[in-house]
Length: 93
Length: 255
Length: 290
Image (cartoon, rainbow over all chains, first blue to last red; front, side, top):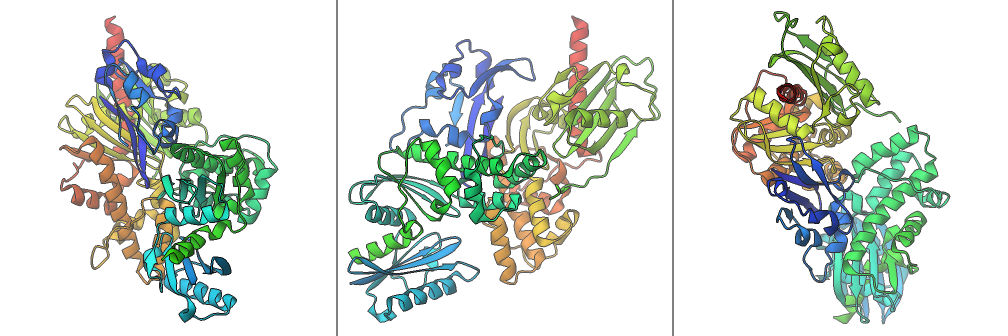
């Protein structure tokens, strides 16, 4: 399943997509430590699979919470994407 | 040389006239329905103040969201360019300029000459600019001018869950129903908008000194929340809301 | 200042008088506590048996109880007769009698699959305060989804702001939006606050109300279509939720996508609760096998 967490508003589209099919096989759970804000959690989803999600309290403001990792000047690799050994995380912006 | 800058803002139109580098007039007019007509009124008021007529002005440059529809202007400059130029003139030591208007917020990194090095913008969403505060003051039934001072009376941090101005209005009403003091709600609103501005500023990097310009810099509640969020002081020039018009007039003088 | 009601759906209940539930093997229920309305669905041996829809009160547990009580009315059934109960929706974790909470995304997909048939791949649920776009497989399992509850644009609330501005009853918006000579371009601002100022400007410019309404329905449709593009629209396509009843928006979404939405005689309001009851059945059977 592709789970898109985030939103679209007048200023743009801000989604973190997690491919939970890749999560199921992952034992590393690098996302938990990889995100400096601790936005990820491992949950048992509706189909009883252990997958990553973006915690509820961050979903409505990821544009702002992710801002520190997205400086205007240069774009270093995103720590959450780097930390995910399963390659399950994609940012839309 | 005499030049004029016209800032066609979403809510207000501001005109500033420069003569040999000195400000000789400034005028402000609500943008209203017919923005071109409002701009003419502001322009004529500024001319009257300066005691000159239109022919004595060498160049006119427009800026602001509606700059393309500005009458009289020979040229335009972006909001970012104008804010950097004007901000640099008023606070030469500033390297980070935060410009918060009714519908947009901007963070600009500049060099010593006022040249734009980097910038970030909050736009097209009311949650990122002054409109948010206005909508919340209406929901609280507090005059906008009293909203900032009211916020200063609170020392309580109240989190707001809603980001969108429309949903935040309902949240403010719920907080009122839950008997949350109005001053605490005012502070929650200013903390929320300041948080969004701070994360935008962080994207360009905070380099001292930090100047705050734009009409929302007149809101003491917002300024207080912003300083707390940035964990540093900000310099607010006297003519903070005229920075765009000043920048445009300076660009006009450069020819 | 009083909170306004935005989507004034009637409260109602129904049950299948021809079915005797006594002695039936699996009795399951789904309760969907939404931000505006709450529904309860009871299924007996995989067949829809009873449902109810009520307004959500200020308290989720109470709203869940109310919906359930209504669904049970005149059936002779009590809460204890139900073998497995699933809570879903915005208030799903606050359904006191639920055996499990399932997200509204998963429940909508499963409920939509049952309601429209297994060929449904894309479900758009337009609620009072959110908008969900779901892609699912032939078993009703979610394969791709997004939910937007951050921004009021594209939700019932956004439409309510416009109905208020124009002093038009919300239920008339759809019809009025078609009473224009020519389809106007959409309101250009996405943000409801800015779109409202834009609409005020159009009214002052002399636009008739209906034209402004059409321009906003057009903008809302466009906005929802861009949401759908993220998950990819595949036939069959279905629209559920409050705005699903507003043809002014639905017709324009269909036009922009070039796809007609599936029609159903079922009440699409209960899709989430129905999915909950179906999840309940699967979970009950799984637990009995152990």
